[in-house]
Image (tube, rainbow, N blue to C red; front, top):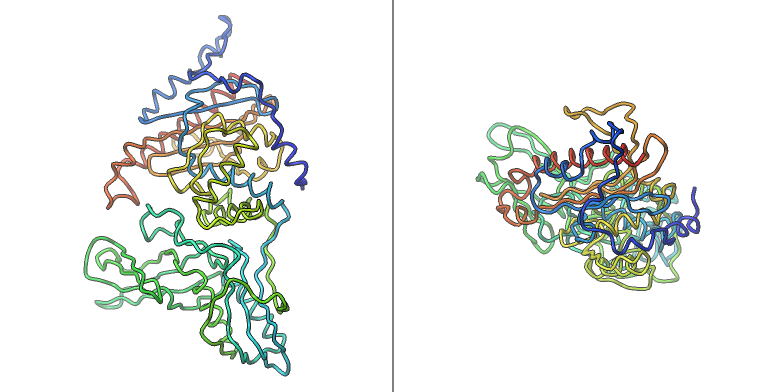
Length: 493
């Protein structure tokens, strides 16, 4: 475990040379000795970019991770969308403001008296934003309070929502049904997604909406589905005041299937599921009421404590969970003394933090996950951040292994270059930033951004989930990224 102090000493250190601010706009051509046939056969960066034929804009910056010496760049000062690479900055931001041992706590509290199975007073469900909280964890709270002897609540069932602002969705430009664009709240359940399942029975369908976890499948009414006679659009969403109202096209269902859909009422979602779990124990709760905070005099009856923040971030970096990034970013902003009411405000706070901490003058964040295409980082600034975090620091430890692959897409076992990084993918945007260890043991910090924003802006609305050409673009971008890394591993080993 690397302490917060040690991590920050690496993160805040300015190890880049003075020449960093004046980095060249074109690739630095390495000096090649005429007798060195190997170096003369390594492709130039310009050739690799030309072969990728991505269109739009490409920028990269690679440096010695220990000294900050800039080795090779293309368009290092041109701000581009980082996509999910933004999560690496969100990691550093959260670790700085909250510390690696920070934990989320979800509680049942009351200022009433529990005696003979009866709670005389209100029962409060209090969230702190835990992004990994699921139905099994909620069931654990229900079990704990029932095992204390609770059989009846005479007061209200209250839900405290004030720990975080309730945000309807991460990126309003996304299609309404994509599960990676959920709402955000102090009370998050199952990544704020509901499980929709269908099966053909004769000429009709049986459908279900539930809050399933590893062992439970409680049905919900806060999100409802109706099958309609049409082919497109596949899904529609509307706000029905009391619930999320979904429709699905019959022509798109086939015989059977399932899908996770985003929840827009996360606090109500968790409250309903908790009521169901308590009812399974024979305890009837009234309809929930909502307030910002429980009374200060309330006593804790049951509590769920999350994993420490560094482990939560490790999972976020591996699975690129947008909800986790947004929650930890909002919490970090609050820890800095600002009560942001939107992701835009909180993203601006992280922008200022990166500017003050790392000198990133032209960074702009509209959120903490990178889902919003309006975020921008210069490749130089991203690489500078990686150098500051250190080649053996906690940020590198949180990144996932990126295997090198052959032309068929198979992992090359025993490849001499070891890469840990954060990937990012949006339609016609592909990014990668992290560390590469060469065969000699030299550590390189690198950033590779590519984006064809004109093609992205031209995507028809009915193709936004899987636009024509986006997979081809992404595959070509990944081949280019690997070719650049292999070049650097050979030239700068």
